[in-house]
Every structure is written in C-alpha cells, then in structure tokens.
Image 1 (cartoon, helix red, strand yellow):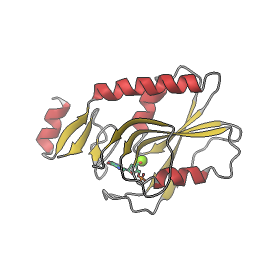
Image 2 (cartoon, helix red, strand yellow):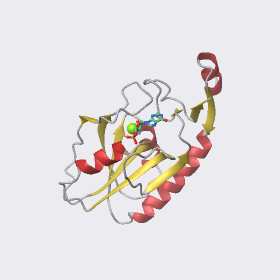
Image 3 (tube, helix red, strand yellow):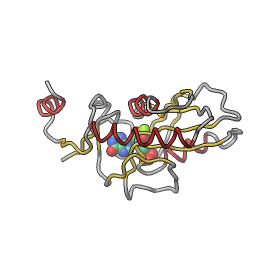
Length: 181
Ligand code: IMP
Ligand code: MG
C-alpha cells in the first residue's frame, strides 16, 4: 500500500503539500550549506523532540563534517493545534556545551515561542555559537521576535502533518508533508 492509499483509507482531510522528493532535495541543500559554514568545526546538533527527529536524522546524513548529536524535549501544544504559549522542558540535553558550536534543529516555527525558549535555555552557557535550523517556517504566525539561520520551506499559516509533524501524536510516520484540506 502506498502512503497516499494509507492516508486515504484512514483520513479524508489531508492533501499532499511538500513531496518526500522535494523535502530530501531541500535537505541536501541545507546540509551542503551547513557543511560549508561549519567547515573544520564539530557542531553539536540538538534536535527538538518529538517533531524534529526525522528531519534531524536526514539532515545529519547530508553533513560532510564531524558533528555530534543530542536532544531536548519541550512541549507547548499538548494535543491541540494551537500553541498554548506555556512551554515546558520535558528533557534536558546531556552534552557539555561550553565552548561548543550548537545548532538547534526544529521541525517548524510558528509563534516563535519554542525558539525563544530554547535560546533562553542557553543564555548562561558559554557557547562558541548558537544557530537555529527549522525545516518549516509558518508565515505570519510570529507572536515573539525570533530568528532562524536556516529554513527549509516557508509555508502559509496552516496546520501541516507528516515527516515528524503530528496531529494529536499521529501521522509523524509519513514521508511527505500534508496540509489539512
Ligand atoms: P511555536 O512555539 O509556536 O513556534 O511552535 C513550534 C512547535 O509547535 C513546533 O516545534 C511543532 O512541534 C508545533 N507545531 C507548530 N505548527 C505545527 C503544525 O502545523 N503541525 C504540527 N506541529 C506544529
Ligand atoms: Mg517541535
């Protein structure tokens, strides 16, 4: 069964928005850019769980430099489609980050609160550098000031699923990204 058949059998309200091929192509470009920017450095990629785990795995494999990997887990949405604005840290990263180049890997930035929360997490660390990469950026969703250093795709302010992104914890397993019809 194909992914589309699987979706059509269980759901009626999703249509493909970014194909698996386009995602992979864009990740190659991001990987090349990051490999160039961090030439001769060994950044620690810190993935933001749960959403970013698939993007993180694919992005890492496009890097042609040494890198390390770690994760943080934060939650803001619960099972809602609207960010609660109340972000909680669920799992701290383990690495010793002092003096290190840190790249935070996010699936999507919407209100920007998660990015800001993560930035503040490092406010008292003596990092060599801190950058943010997000596969998706929602246009017009920002409620706080934030900055991303690398963005895969800018998308309209609509709810998307697949490729790590969930709807009430499901549909993270899809290889393409889908939007609610
Ligand atoms: P922000 O803090 O409002 O920028 O929200 C960012 C987090 O909300 C992301 O890391 C996702 O986990 C989640 N999120 C935002 N928009 C979507 C969406 O369209 N689909 C699935 N998850 C989303
Ligand atoms: Mg997330």
